[in-house]
Length: 98
Image (cartoon, rainbow, N blue to C red; front, side, top):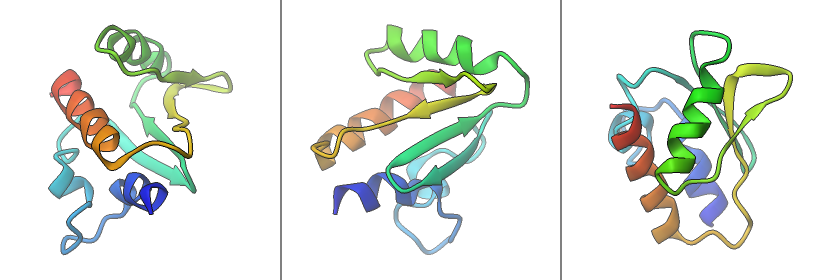
């Protein structure tokens, strides 16, 4: 299921092929959070998610910052997102923040 694949990037098991380590998210300046299909990237400083949203939108990925916490960037993928699109989003996130 694509939803599980996208969200599994938030699981921190070293043996998981879709863990942050294997997806290349370890060492990036955020903590990965997830609930169902909703995914958030928690940055260390209030307001950082607004800048991150600007950078990702410029790179072709639509993401928004959380109104109640501007240190969290939200991904709200449609249920129709494909595996290829998930891979592309992860690649863009890695290249934008590394």
